[in-house]
Image (cartoon, rainbow, N blue to C red; front, side, top):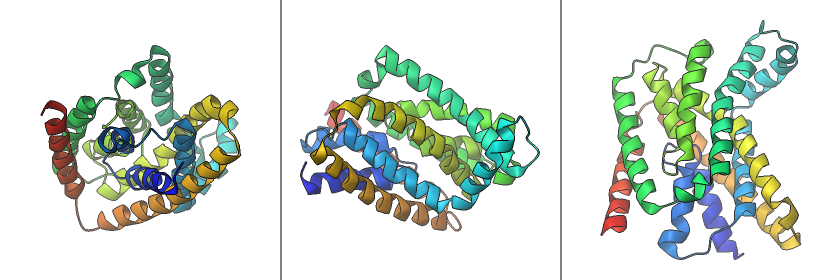
Length: 267
């Protein structure tokens, strides 16, 4: 696989995985709009590994807290902040794992990988994010994350199985609708991505485990490194911007992209 193609895929995945603009939608659109061959599942797994490493590093204090609380959770105890965080992240992940397995078994994933679906979801869920960000109060913090809110955000995450929706976008939308501050909605969304990306990586990795060879392993390693760098850059930029601006820039981008895709799809 040419190095430039690897870097393009890694940049798309890394920059869009955590921004509310849909990484899967961009990756599906890449071969459709450019004529480049599909990068394949092995590269998809590699860039997911890269973005997973980036979010773990960026939110290491929260990740460490949850990991330290995991043994207490496994003993059925929720008497520490870490155990409670680990529990809520697990609860928020269950719906998307079940929905993902169901859609995979039903063959829905390929059916939804069309430019028309991506165009409408990019535009529609962008406007939903704008509405939630504009009307949602900013009265809750991440430390006050509740079981009910974890379930709501977990159910919302299922919608991200439709390309163009954006996993981070829909969970941030749910967080803002529930009343979380912008930075806290984004932080919870990013933490939710860790078990979700891990589950997705395991599922995809099982599919390509028998196909690996030296060349594919090399390409995957390069893709993972670049995706890690781009994802870390995107995370830092978004979390800094949220201190002073709303999600409006991402909404504007989604609206223009959605309209352009509609023109391509129906023009």
